[in-house]
Length: 308
Image 1 (cartoon, helix red, strand yellow):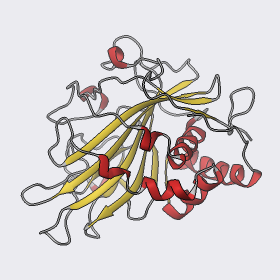
Image 2 (image 1 turned 30 degrees about the vertical axis):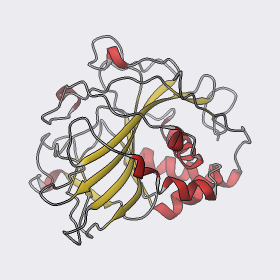
Image 3 (image 1 turned 90 degrees about the vertical axis):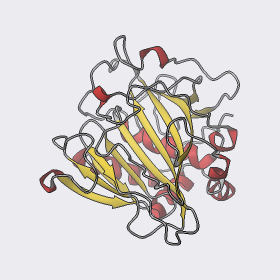
């Protein structure tokens, strides 16, 4: 599906540039859901799609390794040469210890169910892609090893996740404890939650000095930079992943006789890898043959730079 390139208003550009400048200064910003919804509307999201994206998590079924999670993923490219966002071919997923991810399945090649057209053609998702692309393009940040920083493309692996707490199973959005996600920029957006306590799923931001794998409640207070909590629809956190680590508290149920649910979109975005990176065999830039998608980037000028 291709969106029309209608351009963007001065109003939305001013708002995005204000957020971008704050992101550059603080390296992690929180965008409340009400503000993000307004941004998405200005970037083309429709009211019908706002409704449908809040129920799309009902299609999630299984996860390759975590019994308390339901998941799908999909790979997309922010291509600033041709000013497009496109769906890429399916590939397995690997996240390793050397990328600051310490868990029993670190380094394991995992195959997730694929994000399908009910989500990938949603205009709210397109707006979120455009928002992240605007925030990251051309920004100075700490580089990860074995990524190709000479290319004008970014790969976004989108995870659509539901964390479930029910009898005898505690849902933990970050079972791995303190970690980073092995990418350049991580963005997390809430779609909804059910039967979740007020102290559930708090995100803690840490300096890079915090020890990987440390439980959320056992970290060194000297390394704590702040905390946020996704509570409202479209609450969004975006951070430079190689400059911050993070951890999360579990999802606890208000009524323990009923499952507690937390539905998220996670955007893992980085430059393409080079030979020697654990993900190198799984980093194709080929378009998806069965479920193509193309969104034009009206936020980019004729030279591939974000509009001023």
